[in-house]
Image (cartoon, rainbow, N blue to C red):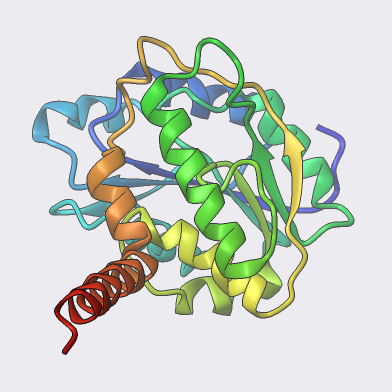
Length: 242
């Protein structure tokens, strides 16, 4: 990998399979030598997966599941002399060739998101729905159009470590909140197309579309609910002539 910049790879992981081992092996072969894997409260039956990771890999272990957001923040705290860090999902959804693409873009860009194509036939309906809803909400709140607000493949210049650590949220809502913080601070969000991989419905993912979407967008949903209630009350008042 022809890149003089040093990039730290962060891989949050919960109950992984052999895809994690293959990912780490391919990353090392591609020249990424600073990799942090976060065992976010995985069951004991998955200990052998983590035990098989190369000794040079830094591993953070949570005794219980604390969430993807907190896992990323704990890993960021360990970064010392890297120019940027790249978050990568452990479920096989991200190809190393796409990690390299993001890495190369970081040479002259501070924020780079790997953007999937949700129009492809292999994308499950729940993923299409979740991203469409998230994309609309993000556009309404920020005025910025992003085709993939839920991507886990993200390259971030370490100048934004403080912003990343101060971003609220411990679970999946953290990633969306970070995008909101970027928009709030007028930090340009760059995107690059990556492969869209969903094997067997992406069963390795722990994202719950309904539960986690509610958590991610709870603020705007509360506002919408209040508006609906006010509209209903206003209608009742008009009908009753109060």
